[in-house]
Length: 310
Image (cartoon, rainbow, N blue to C red; front, side, top):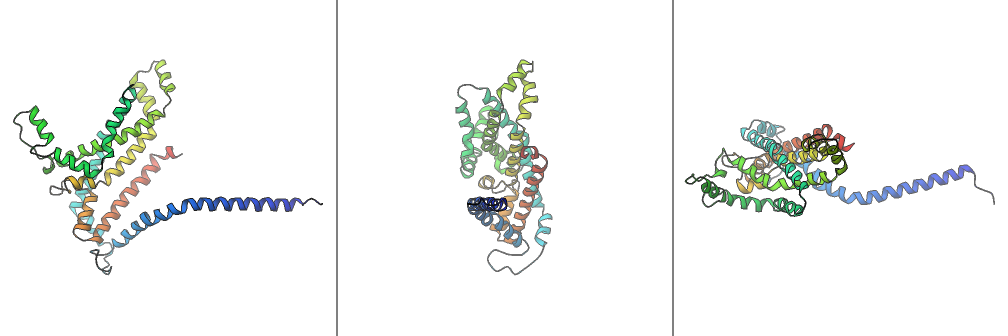
C-alpha cells in the first residue's frame, strides 16, 4: 500500500493538534465558567448597578424616575461629614502602618527565635482573628464600660481615685480606643503572614552572614527584611484595603458616634443609604469608596508589587 504524502501527514497532524487545543479550551472553560458566573453576578453586576443608581434621587422603594446626574457626587464632596469619615479611614490606615504591622512583624521575629512553645503562642495570638467582628465588638464594649469595665478598673488599680473615663463616648479618644480593638483583632493575622514569609527564608543565608561577622541587627536589616519584602508589601496592601472598608466592628461598638467622631466611609454609607432611605446617595458613596479602593489597588500593584508578580 502506498504511503500517504507529506502534505496529508501534515494536515492530519494539524487537525489532531487543533482537536487537542479545542479539548483543552473546553476543559478550561468548564472549570472557569461557574466561578466566572458567580463573580460577574455577585461582584461586577452589583458594582455597575450601584453606579447606575448613583445618578438618581431614589429612596429604594419606588421606580427610578428622578435622574439628577452628578448631583449626588457634588453633594458628597461638599459634605464635611463625609470628609471627616474619609479622614478617619486615613487615620486608621496611618495608625495601622505605624503600629499594627510593626507589632505583628516584631512578634513574628520573636516567635521564630522560640524553640518549644512556639505553636502555643502562635495559636494564642491568632485567636482574636477567629472571632467575628460582632462578638469582638460586644466584648470590647464591656471592657471599655465607664462603670465596671476592665480598662477603668485597671486604671483605678494603678492610680487610686482616678476618674472613670467613657472612652467610647469621648470624641477625642473614641477613634484611638477603636484602633486598639482593631489591632487586637487583626495583628495575629499579619503575624501569621510574616511567620510564613520567614519560614521561606533559607537558614543558610543568615548563618553565612553570622559567620561573616554580621550582628543580629545587621542580619535583620540587610538580609531578613529584604527577603521578607514580598510578604511585607502584601501585608501593607491588605491592611490599607481593610482600613478603608471598616464597618461592622465600628458599627457594633459606636455606630459611628459620638457626633460622627468614629464615622468611616462605610458607616456613612449605611446611615444615608439604609437608615435614611437615600439609596441613590448611598450608591454614590459606594461608588466613591470603590473608586478609592480600586485606584489604590491598581497603583500599589503597579509600583510596589510589580517585582513580586514578575
